[in-house]
Amino acid sequence: MAELNEEHMIEEIKANIATGDSLKARLVLDHLGSVDKKTQNRLLYELARADADFTIPLLNHVLTTFPDLATQLPVIRETLISHLIAYPDLLIDGLRNPVIQDKTVLVETAGELKLEEATPALIDLLGETEDSHLLKLIIETLGLIGDPQCINTLTDYLYAADRELIITAIQALGQVGTPTAMHRLAERMGTDNEIDLLILGIFSDVQDQVSLEKLNDTLRSHHAHMRIYAKDELIRIGVKSVPVLIENLKEHDDDFLVHTLNVLGDIGDESAIMPIRKLLDTVPKNANVRFAAYEALALLPLRKGAYTLAAGLTDKEDHVCVAAARAIDRNFNEILA
Image 1 (spheres, rainbow, N blue to C red):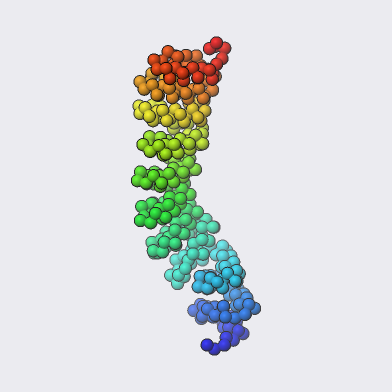
Image 2 (cartoon, rainbow, N blue to C red; image 1 turned 45 degrees about the vertical axis):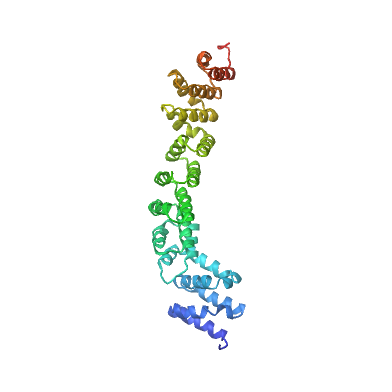
């Protein structure tokens, strides 16, 4: 191999920049690892001075083709990213450019910038690649950007063959966080308990109406661990979940009523008092429902109407009487005395 003429390389890349010949410039840069540090810096300096649309693909080529060299020369990555940040339109062009084979840095930067304008290009790129690492990265990036126009695309990956892609798509839709995104996640539930718990965790974070209703509906689950998780999260969310829980008191499913009353008691919001008292006025046939209602009232601040608790002392079931007595003791006042 002929010895490299470093001065000639510098002159060559300057000429390539002047004529816009990126192919020849790439050939020069392919020898970047074979010259001394001073020449490396000079070549990169000249390249950085060129127009960004010329520089970006070449810097990306060096970064992705010679990763060890790029580690030794961090200026390569730094210059590329600074150009992408300064020229977001060129970043989008780069995502669509078939000449740029490894688009990892471009995708990552689009996510860091939360560049909504890049969403269509990223969606197109998803359809063009079969590389699982890049697929995962693009899905993660769409989540970071959070543009609702990606919801349909992300929904497709909820049913992918690759479990890791399913989980990534779930998390991305959680980051989008719109009611439509939450509906799509709700539709995915029911076939895998682990995935269902992951989705419930997202509902717990988003806390919109759809999310609260789905958490609430999970109180009906036949799986104890799912019910327990939903209960804990509804209690953690607190007052915000009370209206949807109160609606449950109109239901006739005894187990559902008991779970609801337990949660309302633990939340401790006084807006639940009247609905629970109305439920007791109907004298539920199931003693467990009556018991849970008095247990809930024992945990709530009954400023008025505490005397109505006395009716529970005459219940035909002893454990209901005990619960009513606890509620009375908890809310004892002069009127009751």
